[in-house]
Amino acid sequence: MDKNFFDTVYAIVEKIPCGKVATYGQIAKLCGNPRASRVVGYALHVNPRPGIIPCHRVVNRWGRLAPGFAFGGADVQKELLEKEGVLVFQKEGQYCVDLCEYLWNHADI
Image 1 (cartoon, helix red, strand yellow):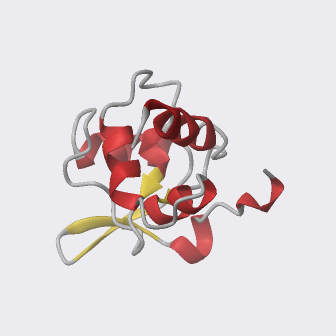
Image 2 (image 1 turned 60 degrees about the vertical axis):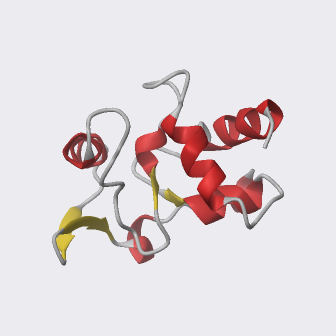
């Protein structure tokens, strides 16, 4: 993937509202490449503007937080989401969010 794809990822992730999450696959589809969810993950791992691009709002397709969250680990991602009102719970030893409750409806972009 090229820099333009990463820039598209960042532009879309910046639109995820506070208190909502999106999945890597959802972002990949919005970028025009539904099979690029791993590339989305890599783009967020090298986020050039942490704190501005809210990569903590992106989770996997089951609502699991990233165990290797690039900006401090899963505990930091959990704290950031909880500050926004997202309830984070543990399931099978991993932090998760309820996608039925917190998944971003991106129809308005």
